[in-house]
Length: 450
Image (tube, rainbow, N blue to C red; front, side, top):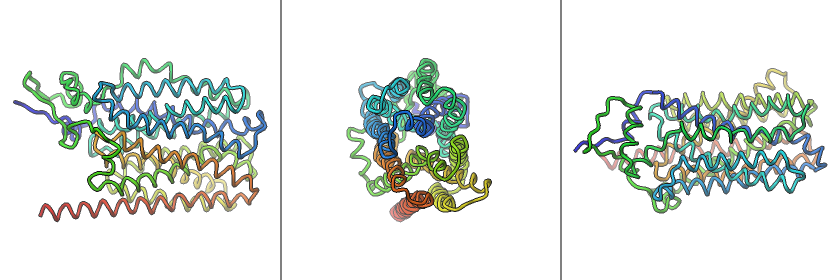
């Protein structure tokens, strides 16, 4: 009887059309998420003026969606690993989340006051938080092993592309039509749901575990056309992926994974403090520093360009060197760049420092997710990513509130940038500890084998 290992075929595959289909569709979904990251920061100055709200209230209002994203990441991340046994696939959860966040982002554009706006933002956040771990898990399953960090980072660079689209559209549309147009455009993904449903392939691991052999073979032949299949052929997975875990959250702490899991949570927490503090408040911070609103939105564009380049270049170097070391370099560079922003700099250096801050925050977060997606096996991968993003969303909630509080104190503007360098330093320490623990575990494994 012939047995085919689906994971080995994917691990050693060359890039084919199906890989690019998964990358492009996944990137498209992440672009929507990135658009939402920046949309509130773009709308914030006009929104504050129209509804006459202070900076602390605006900070809390910006954090409402992040509460939704926190619950969405935890709920939909763990659900995808649990519901497989009932035939509810990761692909279906992705579509559900897209419908959820698109519908309620659209409704934000018709909100008549802060309370109604907050409710819609929270419900949209559930979908935004839930889609991310499932898209990353699906992309990781299809990525060849030697290109995994590069492809996951390339796909996730859509996060920064979405942010850039939001900033560019904001510079053009907000002065003419007001802030609400940005949220109305956030409903466009609803029109793309049928295309995504038709073209996005199902999870290979899911198909194998559900004994849908013929469908799995059809996809595997698109990855490797040399596969031969008969009625007696069986498809298997790596031993660690053979079954769906009954308690995926508990498994995150089993087999000496507990400390690394906690360190990942801490790292993502710090990265998201930085991502959302800069994403929501950078235009306002730069206005306070003496720049006009249109120029401040250009800084937001530079931040996201840096995030995209940091993710793509970081993923490339991670596949050739060491992912943890690349992450530490990014976060440390971000800390230096943010401290430099507290000084009066020439324009070119100012833009460069903002781009480096984007590479450290947005790019660093993306590489952390790529790191986790390779650390956890497929039966607990979405849960691991979802829990880390859920805990990390507490940092995302804290970031805008912290910036709003600092601005309310009317301190010199340079204090804000120095404060934002602290999460970068803590992230460097956390990732370094992960690196040394994994290195020690590998050495111990070699000793046991010997």
